[in-house]
Image (cartoon, rainbow, N blue to C red):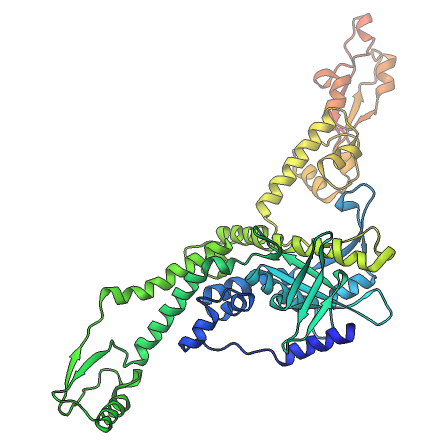
Amino acid sequence: MARTLLGALSNAARTATVPVPFTSRAAAHSVFGQRRDAEAQMRAMSAVGTLFAIVDRTSNATALVDWKLYRKAKSGRDEDRVEVTNHAALDLWNKPNAFMPRQEFVESSTQHYDLTGESSWVIAYASGYSVPLEMWPVRPDRITPVPDREKFLKGYVYTSPDGEQIPLGLNEVIQLRRPCPWDPYRGLSPVLSILPDLDTSRYAAEWSRAFFINSAQPGGIIEVPNALSDDQFDELRERWNEQHRGVGNAHRVAILEHGKWVDRTISQRDMQFVELRGATADRVREAYGISKTAIGDFEDINRASALAAKAWFAEQQTIPRLERIKAALNHELLPMFGPTADGLEFDYCDPVPPDPETEAATLTARAEAAAALRTAGWEPAGVLSAVGLPEIPYSGAPAPAPTGWAEATAALTGEDIENAQRWVVVTEDDDNRCDPCAEQDGRTYKNRAQAYKDYPGGSGYIHCTGAEYGNECRCRVVKRGRKGEGS
């Protein structure tokens, strides 16, 4: 089965049809208008510039995001997961097949999804092995689901360009779909909702092109007094085209023999064809829910709004596509690797760019919350974990704000910071000093609050016994200087 399928895929690549330029009615009719199949939806990308820009931007943004494989944590929290750097599933995802890396695989797959509403990955196995060997992004119009009354889905059929139909099992196809309200087996394409608008845009472009090709001005009528023979008619047409057709021959003086030129001036109604193209571009962006800024229109935009637009695009456009891929990898691809994939999961790196202002505000809010919890008596380690801050050394009490140059320098450099933050008891050694005050001489406190708790206002030890003998307290607390002296 693997050889047959890979041969068909190779044949499909060799016989892939080249998109036909939209220069004739037959070609136009075969792509738009009555055709609503997946091939017509895919070809629409090369027909309308706005659609190309949208699909190219979304598929590129999705493909550029990095992926990692993790072992799930018992706590269920993402931050507790352990990254797995060596696994067959990771190797396959980084190099789906011998001809394309993951980035090209994802880009091609996302193009199919954006244009047709679905994307199909065909899984190839080596003969005699049950582990996936390769993955290929296959055109959605070549994959047909086979419904089943009991199991809902029996499998798929791949139709090669030469008409060969190859049956595929459920373990050989992974299908990503934008759910279709009336068909649970197929995806819903945004292109279907704008087919008339795409036709309008193409017709307006062809009209503008014809406007310049046909002498760069509206057409007119050549009146002749008598009927012309076939030879005379052909000669007149050839001479006119030779001398006046094309942009380079615009506005040349016409010399007519036995004829009269009747001009047809351009009307305001004709000029509105150009405006139609702008209106069509708006309809295409509405169908995909995308802004002008997202596809490169930076008119009237500053740095702040550009950063906001970039974040919006990642949140509203890139992440939903990544989530569909993530679900396919975790729920369909990983189980194909058996017990070796138990407890593993793929996850993408966050594509949303960091906002410096938001990060600063978040850090401030977390710090304030941590301070409030610590003041309430909660343990430091639990406080940091609760507010989402990393573990940092804890000194046991908050440091006072530096008030002088020496203290500010110490706080910033960490030099002698312990001395700069401590208060010391100074006593007068005389006959009136009591024993409790004598014992306090030289005692240090970590901060002002602790010192003033024993010495209200900075002097007068609360356990002083000198008052019993009519003596004032002989000690006080002072801020210890940088060298250790009281000051």
